[in-house]
Each structure stands twice: as structure tokens, then as C-alpha cells.
Length: 305
Image 1 (cartoon, rainbow, N blue to C red):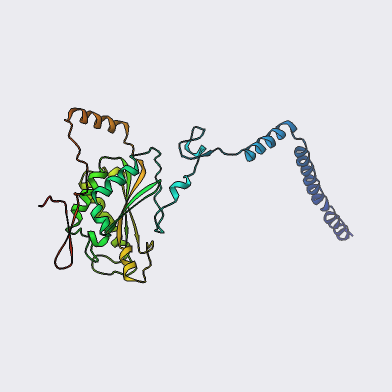
Image 2 (image 1 turned 30 degrees about the vertical axis):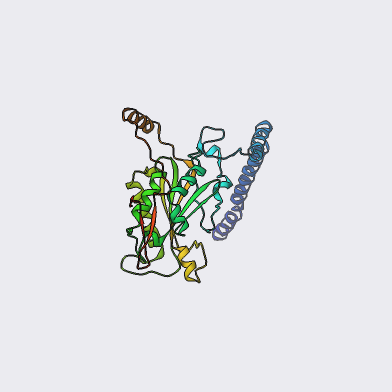
């Protein structure tokens, strides 16, 4: 009898366990409704101000600017920096892009420099060894590689010093930016010095650039560019076209390099204490092209009888 009573009590204990699950379920339902109520109670004024602020931020147009330092704001990124299209266009026949000069101050007149170059190296222009092109942004001086270097070499030949010296006398007094660019044909080179046309074009441009610096041109104005065989000026299918593609180009920008204020003051003080030296204006007698008996040419600036 006692045993049967114990079994009945034990069964009732198992039947009452559903109350635990029910209590947990009600607790979760209560928490859910509390969360829903808190979300429903919103400060409409604050919510409206946030929406209006986001709408104004996304609809506002940034001011268009032509320079990094132009525009409004206290930071450089407040203005949109866009290079003018005129600096991105090249008047030369080469497919190579021109360098972008961020400085906006005009330098010496390209037309005047063009006239001086015509008088100084007119003989080389007539001989087809030098070409001078000019547009509103750039003045380019195309120097045939055969005029400056031996085949496959980046060492300046005997004609190069006189040619570069004649050019530097015109380029040194002005402050225009200068870009020295090297080009080659598509004939592959692979020797103990140069493993590609990239290296050859860079070495030739560097040799001309270092010569200009040695002659007193401010290195702040200079930069070197190498295009190898990938920006041809002419068709590489013929020897004449390949010869036109082997060259070094000295490009003179219309914009000038502006020295820092401290450097300008030192330069002005130095020039004030030094005596004035007359500047020799180049003329058509600066460069002479002498044809040698063996078919070669000799470039000289000597005043020979």
C-alpha cells in the first residue's frame, strides 16, 4: 500500500515541470514587449534633425578647383585638385604623355627662347640633327641619339659637350621647368651594361641631365623620364623610322620653378654684392657643323678661321 502511494506522488512531480518552461516563456515575452515599447518611444525632433543633416550632406556639391591649395576649408582635402586639360595634352607627334607641372607661375616666354635656340643651333636644325617644336605649354628640343652617343652607349660623344653647352647658355638664365626624356627604337639590347631599352633610354637621359647640372642649371628645375621603345615617334619598320625614334628630348615648360623665400633672399643678396657681368647672347655662329672626309661630322663652337 505504501509502495503504491509513493509511485503516485512521484508521477505528480513530473507533471508539474511544465510550469518551469511556461515561466521562462512568459519572461521572454515580457522582455520582448519591453524592447518593442522602448523602440516605439522615439524623440521625433532629434530623429528629424538627423535625417535633415544627412540629406544636406549627400546633396551638397564640392567646389571645383584647379589646384590643391585652392578652394575653401582648413584642410588640403577640402578642395578638389584637378589638373587642367592643357597640361595633359602634347603638341608633339610622340605618343608619350607630357609631364604634369603643378606650379602655376609662368616662366620666360617660350617664343623668345625658341628664337634664341634657332640662332644658336640653326646649323644643326638645318642638318636634321635637331628639331625644335613649340606650343602653348611646351618647347621641345629633339636631339638625335647619333649626335650625342655611340650606338648602344650612354656615354656622351665628342660632339655632345659643344651642343649641350650651347643649349645651357640659353636654358640657364631662365627658371622654366625642364624635362629630359630618353627614347629608343624597338631593336632589343642585351649586353653587359644594359639589359633593356628602358635602361638605355634612362641612362642617356641621365647623362644629358647631369651635363646640364654641371653647367649650372638648377637641379630643382630638372627631371628625367625614360620611355624606352614604347613611345615611338615614327614607324620602327624602317631604318629611317628607327633612327628618328632614337633620341633625347629636352622639354621646356611654360611654367617656372619658384625658389623658396629664404633661397631667393640669399640669391638676391649675393647678386647685389657681385659685379654685373654682361650676358653673351647666342647667335648663328655658336654651332658649326664640319663635314669630315670619312663621311662623319664634327660639331664645334670654336671660332676657327
